[in-house]
Structure formats: structure tokens, C-alpha cells
Image 1 (cartoon, rainbow, N blue to C red):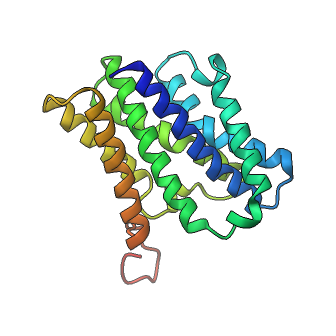
Image 2: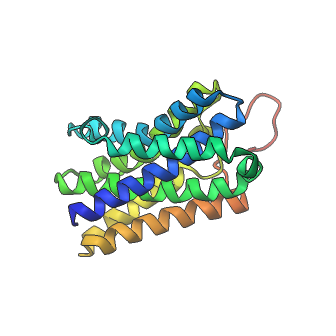
Amino acid sequence: MADGIIYLFDIFGTAIFAITGAVKGVRHRLDFLGVIVFAITVGCGGGMVRDVLLDQPVAVLTNEAYVIVCIIAGIVVFLISPKIIGQWGAIQYCDALGLGVFTAIGCAKAYELGLGPVAIIASGVFGAVGGGVLRDVFSREIPMVFTSDFYASASILGGILFIILGYAGIEGNVLLYSTAVFTTLSRILGYHFRWKLPVARLAGEEKWQ
């Protein structure tokens, strides 16, 4: 896989997640700085977690473009917030796209390091959901990956597809794009049809929730 394509994918995913983070900040009535912090946290958080886990240089700390993209996204969202704050459904679709992109990048980076299937999936998942977890913790909410309809699950399935396609001999950009598209569609379908994993029964409950 070309490093240039992975880099462009990374910047694109960062921008998408930064937008979703900024929107969350606006919805929580944060001030200008708070919105920018949320944009940077969500946009860069997952990539930082991924790079640390892979014992690689943290891209955000070596290339200012990531933070700059997040700041620009945060400013734009802050300025046009009256027009987009009610469009949470559309933002969820953007978030699904970011999930797909970061899953694919995380898997690709671990794959290029020669790591095994478990590490590849973990790299994809942590890179995709890390920023959102930090966002929800800052918002004093249970992280969406533990409660949402098919969020982290879509990323895991994307990682599994990456491995299957890799073993089938598919490489390069096709492998990257296929994983991103599949993960994005899985998340969108889960959101649209409200797919959920079962939760544990409590005393007195007759069936799985």
C-alpha cells in the first residue's frame, strides 16, 4: 500500500472525526475552546492510541497537519453550528465513514509491520474508536462503543474482512478501500436498523434486551 494513500486516508478520517467531535462539543454547549478541544480529541485520539500500541512514532506529534485539520474543522462547525446542530443523523453517517477509514488504516499499518491477525484487528479497532471513547469520557457519558448499535462490532468485522482478503492475496489500495467501505456500510446498516448485541439479563428479566 502506498504511504501517500494511507496518509491521505488518515487526514481525511481525522477531518471527519474532528467534525463529529466538534458537533458533540456544540451539543454540550461548550465554549469555543471546548469545541476545538473536542475536535482535536476525537480527530487525533484514535490515531495516537493506534500508534502507541504499534510502538510507532505518533503521527500527530510529528506532523502538524493533523492538529491543523482538527482546528479548522472545529472552527467551521462552531461558526455554522445553527445550521448543522439538528442534523445529528447526517453526522452519524459521517462518523460511520470515519470509522471505516480509521479501521482500514489501523489494519494496514499493523499488516505492514508484519503483525498477526489479532494485532491487525486490535490496531484497526483502537484506531477507529479511541477518539470517540475519549470524547464520551470527557462528556461524562458511557462510551458509545459499549452501548451503541453496532459501532465497535462494525470495526471488528472490518478487521476480519481485511485479514480474509489479505490471505486471499488481495493487497494494496483495493484491500484498504474494501475494508473502509465494508466497515462504513456495516456501521450505517447497524445504525439504520438499530442492530444491537445482547446485554446480560438482570434478576426478574425474562429475556435478553
